[in-house]
Image 1 (cartoon, rainbow, N blue to C red):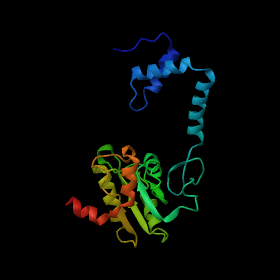
Image 2: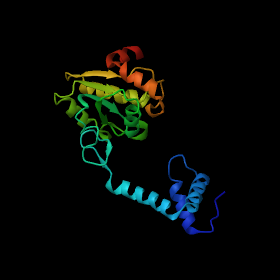
Image 3: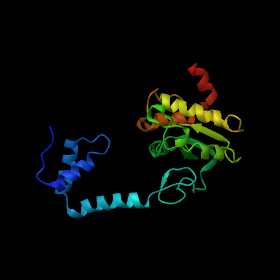
Image 4: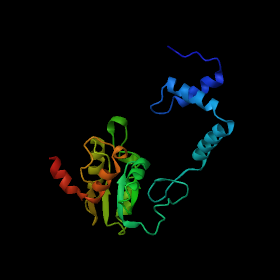
Length: 209
């Protein structure tokens, strides 16, 4: 049954908030009414931060991670090991791995994973720039840290075939992460151990046969 609103402004705000993932109309209404009860300044700061996010956010020119600058803090950090590159799906995975404090290399954010059902192919991801990076001679190891789903495994295998002829070691995080799990939901200890005890990618292919 459609909601009846006494205010078009309220209805418009609820409609916009309900477009966020996992937010239905009733939850959106509760959130909007909550904002109305807050001091005006608090609500304005929220709206201003969202506008600033959309207008000024950048993507790192090296790893494609979300960044405030052209080169993100991780890529510009001289204490990070540029010879080890961890391949992840998106920024949430970077954050999850960083929270473990067990990885001191750099990242390559693909921007998704290969999923024919969703119309996402290799050309829709940052795979070409990863191949170029691996061909530069600087990178010695590429770690596959995609989620252990069918789409994640497909993406790993595709990249493996693209890099197979290069003198680069390819590893994958240990299966401390359950099959079907997304990286961002793994606890920090388990994920940290999975990074530390990574295995050659070829071994994971043998184990799946």
